[in-house]
Length: 84
Image 1 (cartoon, one colour):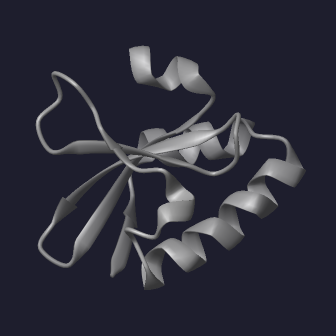
Image 2: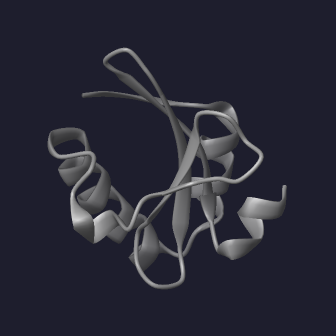
Image 3: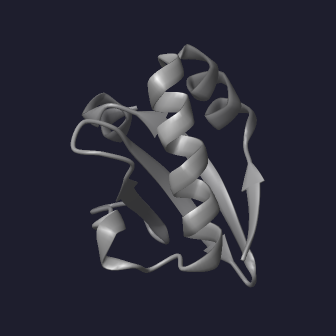
């Protein structure tokens, strides 16, 4: 699957600690290969049609939307990103 990074995602990513950035890089590489693997703990967001959340680790998650063979990465951060 092709990953497309939104400007908000890129901005959020830059704010992450370096160790979380590295974890994210590894997870997203795996995500591109197996997007619905159980380790991502994917959930459909309530009230947001077609938007899903997935976990980087127990504290950090990312939001995404799939359109055809492209996955648009919308946001990344702690649980707070779900409310923005």
